[in-house]
Picture 1 (cartoon, rainbow, N blue to C red):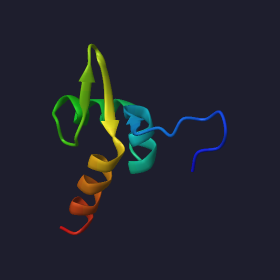
Picture 2: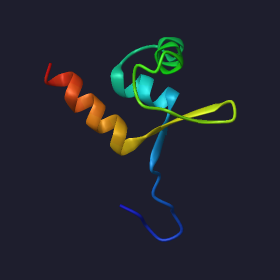
Picture 3: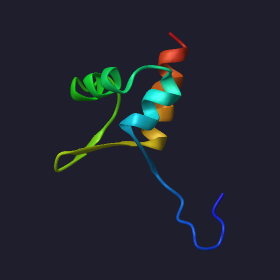
Length: 63
């Protein structure tokens, strides 16, 4: 939900993904570098599109 003056974010940081998955930040960055979950690389920065991550997570959970 977007309130006045706020922009709805469409991506997570790798640190946020670590929190969601309950893993360390360093392991999340290792997974991101190995392309274990969907990321976009913007220069040296890695972001994780929410929709693609949620789809990936649902697929992992059903296995």
